Amino acid sequence: MPLTRITSVTGKAVPVLGADMDTDRIIPARFLKCVTFDELAGTMFYDERFNADGSSKGHPIDQACHAGAAIILGGENFGCGSSREHAPQAIKRSGIRAVVAESFAEIFFGNSTGIGLPCVCASRADLAAAATLTQAEPDTLWTVDLERMQLRCDRASYPLSMPAEPREALMQGRWDAVVELMNAPEAVERLAASLPRPHLS
Image (cartoon, rainbow, N blue to C red; front, side):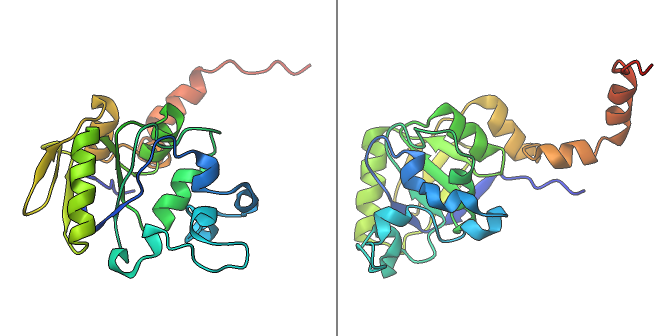
């Protein structure tokens, strides 16, 4: 199978600021009953966005000026709480292709990069500046550049950080464990042959 290398993401951004955005808020528990992750499209932050009667709360994601955003600008400890893999799946399948935040919960970070959703860190001051610029000019196109480790647009540039191993996996197209296995059948067979066999009497 072909590798999908992710070296940059370009698109509009949407600020979803605030510390401790937990996975229960990213994807409410009632949506975890889905049969496939495809059913999660549009469910991210659902209870943050809609009242019980389905009317909009005016969340930034639903504001017309941020329609089609590909990048979330988040806060500290993004993705904390229960370790549900549905949270990054809901974000990615709702059209978001990168998250920039001050910091990430470890399990959420691993679940995200494992499905090709880059999670990169910026300082609180830089995130606030990027959010202010985005709110003033929502059509601004931002680029999350994993090669140069920058968040930039035509008017500003901010440094990013990310652990080396997941960054390299994204850039080399090695983030998908299933593709890795399918592309190395000989190695899989060698490992299988080396494993002890159960003794059947």
